[in-house]
Length: 223
Image (cartoon, rainbow, N blue to C red; front, side, top):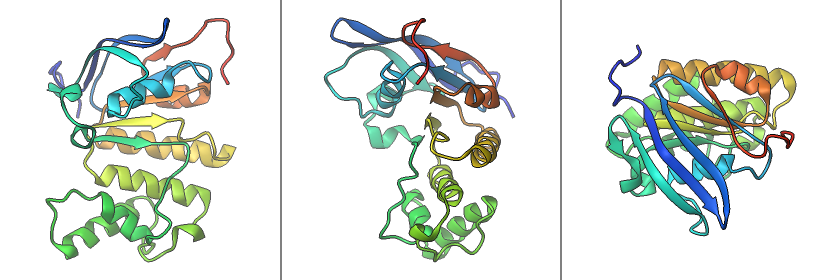
């Protein structure tokens, strides 16, 4: 279901990020719930810097301006942990000392206090990822594609307001990359989340659909 209200979704208004005299990001955009904005550019062009700014963990060496809101909530007024920005990185970043189920349970919001309910949520989201029965598995025993699906499950179970994708497919082989693209974009649309994807891969942008915003010098190749 798409929302017609302009307050729904993620809005970036006159967002400018500078490093010294260099303007890395200059962007205004509205990403409706269930839609994807793809930010493309070469390495070092500021793509991941934009995600850090939205998530609330940008290095203070950068100068920033502008407004960011999701569903009418001013994200920049909130501490990082309250912004509820789900993030997928190039690496799945699973906790190696926790089982797969514990990795998922770690992300379940604290208002779900009942252990049985938490286990049920973890098992349910894993089943949605075709990982039913994986709760007691050691992350080290998983394939690359399985780790990527656990990372996606952990993000979705946290009830994010928005999703930030930092080249999450770049370390997968060609076949797995296509599978994960399909899975990720299907799940975020089912969850009705606004999404920003940063990538240098045009196939990622094609799979995401939606608007593409290019950053960096126009004559510099993607890398």
